[in-house]
Image (cartoon, rainbow, N blue to C red; front, side, top):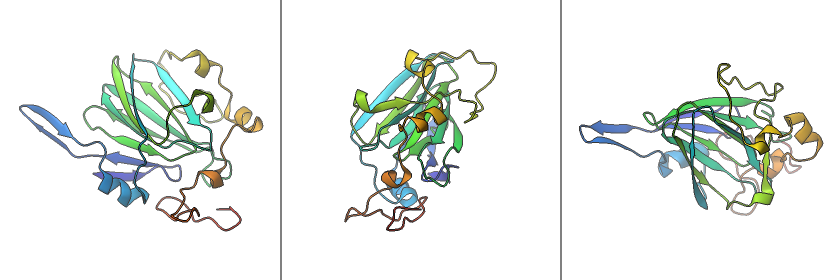
Length: 214
């Protein structure tokens, strides 16, 4: 399993080893030992999600209100997708930054998003299947969206694509509008907690002072 830190603090890309022979292929997209070594704690699994999308479907940018927040571990089980991670945590050292990960059912490359990051993906083929591990159960009233085409964020989606968005994503606010409405999570509230409830010092996250500043 190979790992890469994303351009947003706390986010990681994981590329597993694949084993192919005349029978087909075997792969472990999530390996706890590699995950803990990179992230610094186990993934607190609460639910698994599965989506299937036609080519051109753009889902996101989605995030869950904090608290309780939601961490995600995402990979493409079939087809191809361009996955986007955006830091929307107010006070984060990488606020407004983003990273992209090419996903497909050959590499089974995966992305880990800690609490407070926004997530989107563009299906590049019909019948693209995305698989999610998430840390908290789904609650509709806690789910929020930001415009994935917000020019201030500037995600470089393929220009030739005719996007298919849900009604919710079509009318989603820009990042600036979401911040003005108080929708965005605070970075200090998204940091992983240690055994005593204090912020843990884990790889990828700057240490936080007693005042809550990074």
